[in-house]
Image (cartoon, rainbow, N blue to C red; front, top):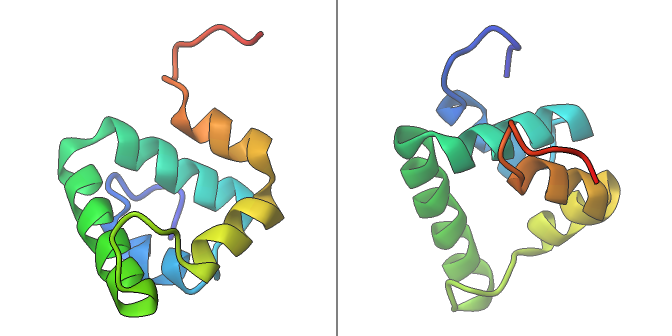
Length: 88
């Protein structure tokens, strides 16, 4: 995923394989939460991987858990926060 790409759907494969750095993953997640187009694609991608790995759509995959562990909970919370949220 290049920093100048507007949409992150091209980086979804690399994200699911754990190939993105923590800042890149944070950017991808933040964009996916804010962009309807990419958010829909991210949801479909994540649910498909979850079904193949665990049989359910709500159980995070081992790659998702590993990415959250590597990036840290703070990075995940930062990615989920609106861009204009004041730091606490």
